[in-house]
Length: 410
Image (cartoon, rainbow, N blue to C red; front, side, top):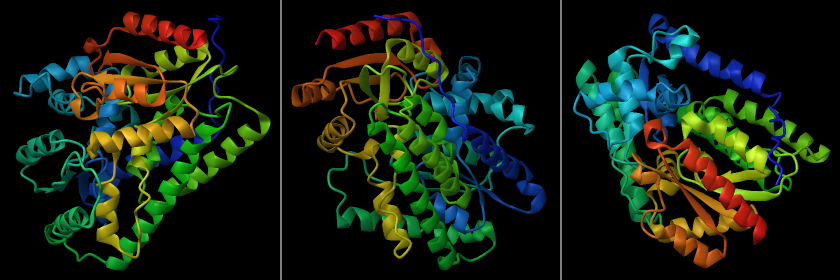
């Protein structure tokens, strides 16, 4: 097997991506001087409501991922541990709080002092309970309101009763948010923002669907970069416009037969969190193995097809209660099976992230059941989303090589 790595192909659209993300962060920095208030929001929280009410919206999970990608986590996590946060809890949480204690942030390279101080914090427990504890730390630190939606976990069918409950909790945020904003919610503006989010989600899904082409014009590793507007700007028109630009480039790649992994031999599915501090190394190894990670659960977590501007609160409730992380194992298995078929996957990589049990789906037999169900072999990588002390690069490299050799012999 050749181990000479092909060249990684960047997107011309990345220039525009850097521009819109730079302006997003610059606006966060300018906000207080311009009289704009800031709301912190969990990544799968009611961002549309916050944009519609005139807040600048900041996503601490995005900041934590930046800390992980910058390999700052190991130096700041112990500072959060010293505050009483266990080393076993989410390393997004401990990275972010530790960075706050240290006064360090990747945003400082952009000319910002760090994350903007919130006027209000808004969470949704559809991902995990950690986000609530995380936000409540800052609420105590700055004496600002912390509001939340308490979505159930292990959801089978997203039925009417559940949607009504979550919609009620979402609507209940309006009054206290109006008190912080100093203005009433304009429902027509909310409908407009939800329409923009819907357009963004449709285009983001179309981007990810390109991975079903053979050869695939993009990979999971590209997706972890390209997902940024869908996560932090989905209520802003710049996000949808950016994906139009990216889609045009991907269409051209498909017409020209340009593969993200030159000489693509195997097609893999990534289940679980990214290993932020090792994405470049993992991407490079996959290139050398001619193995394309064509799809992932993670990048698809920001596809919200239920959003409907004609029914704002109900559709937000349905969209944000339908995400993979808060569903039952039966529903997760059906989803992964559908993805394996759609993307013509040869094997599945499960990341068992030490501090993220909520998004590690290989601990209770699911991976084995999926192999029995689909016939597709799997590999479990032990690591973490941010804490690289929990990850063995050498062991992972060896295991990936062996897994691809197994695929080659099957």
